[in-house]
Length: 280
Image (tube, rainbow, N blue to C red; front, side, top):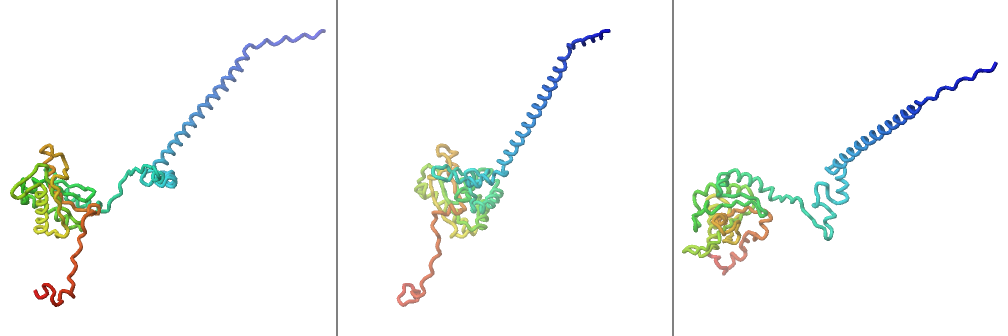
């Protein structure tokens, strides 16, 4: 009896679904890996950016910059060895502190507080300049127009300035200034004489009434040659008519004549026969 042939299995037309599912799975895995990689790159980039920023804000790179350039990350230009070479532009970003400025700063604070009413009224100005501490009195606060006699109303302010001077060893220069309007009176032939006379009047008052040693004082008359404002209008001329009391620092003293003590008389000649004035 012949063996009966087995009927062939029907063809499966759904096999492509398996391959498609595998492809989709691999594609999903690929995009997951790509997404994870991109997130890791962003994290590293942010971390690197933060590190660089921290370094330039005064971290580890500061010492490296100092060793290479001779300066520091926060002191550009002042200590930069590369900027000091031939043709290099040396840009100073911070001025060195003058010891004399630091010395006069407390006096400026005290005077600014004690003369507050006069400062607010515009009669007095207190400023720190390169030459020292400048207390500027408007002419109207000190003198009648065209005169050199100090008004008693100014004594209070001058006394406070004298007290500040007494606490310091610095020399003091009294500077008289006028506007550009010419003056010619029976007493003053020019603005030069008027400005010098007013400086002398302040000197006399400071020394005789308030006890400031004369050897610490000097006077200068500038007439209209050193204005602080324009002489084209009355407001500017009012500002220019002033007396400046300048407590000098080292920079301001440059150019001032040294005040050497007078040499004692020669004893051998003082008692010598025939010496002039020996028997007086």
